[in-house]
Length: 186
Image (cartoon, rainbow, N blue to C red; front, top):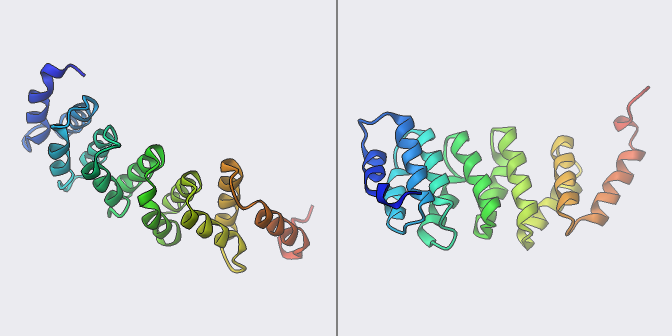
């Protein structure tokens, strides 16, 4: 966080001829300096095509939880095409408690092609504790035809968060115990 290096690190981060890993670490470093001048640089760098660079840009932007532009990029990254970027974005919205991301997290929990993203989105939704997030999570465990794996993950996250769903979890447990198809033979 040596502020006198900010200008040089910014040049490195923006230099497309520089080694990618050096650019990645420079992007994160200028974000860690928490200088507002870093935000437009990082926002522009997020437009680059390399997903690894975009992950480190998100790490840098996570240092600006009060900045609308930084938060907007982080929320939009939940919709990114690349799984690494989505993973970092979901971790960041959870860490920063960005409640405006709930709509995108619900979409990811329902529709993502990667099981790991569905699970991360479920974790983030439970942690964010909004009305919309809680309603979605309750719907997962009360849906008759839903995936047992996602129900289990949702129950786990709701119990960890501890703020809603206790009655629905008990009803699901009771129904599961009564279902002969779900019993494991010894």
